Length: 254
Image (tube, rainbow, N blue to C red; front, side):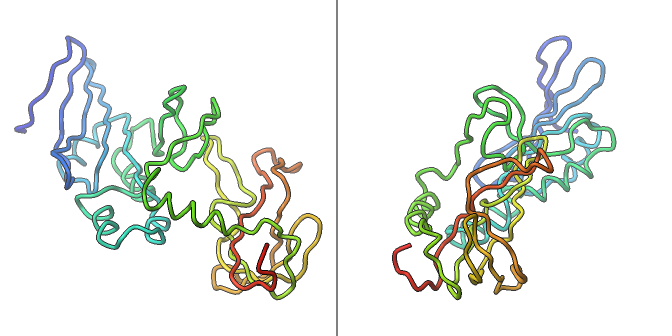
């Protein structure tokens, strides 16, 4: 190989592996111990080259950056040109793509799932975790101050607050990342309600009885609208309030 190894003492060396990225001459780093153990750290990767795959196959520990959730990117406010750049060969890997690389790169690695590190306590968390599982510090979004953050701010003003004023026949949209969720051991929240359009059937003191009116939300459901509370049946499941946007409602001020 023409790659130049960097010695960092008698017991450790680093091997930089070029990776395709459209904004810089990026490299993945393979750390090698004097005992022959190898670990890899890979960021800003849009597609793994054959050379990178070959080096990863010998690593016992692999950390690969997961940059975005595909469905959120596609449905987000970014222009199509930027979406193509992010998802292209010179862009980044999605959460799903990163998981596929992790599970196929090596047969003897110690780490399978992508993660992110809390800057406050240095603990590892799931890639979609909003709050650190150890110190409860919130993770900052890369999009703060961007058009996506501004879009969220505008949308927040439209959220339904007086949900008890809703009437049968009103149509609302459930926003992703709200409602009941399952919290896995790495602190990642897995939300249980499908986002999309629902028609109000009836209202009670704890929430809304609704009928899904889109393919992904078909069927009758109950939208909980109360405070955050832990399920008495399962310690990893929580009830939390759904965030609703008005689609077609009789009361203009809700």
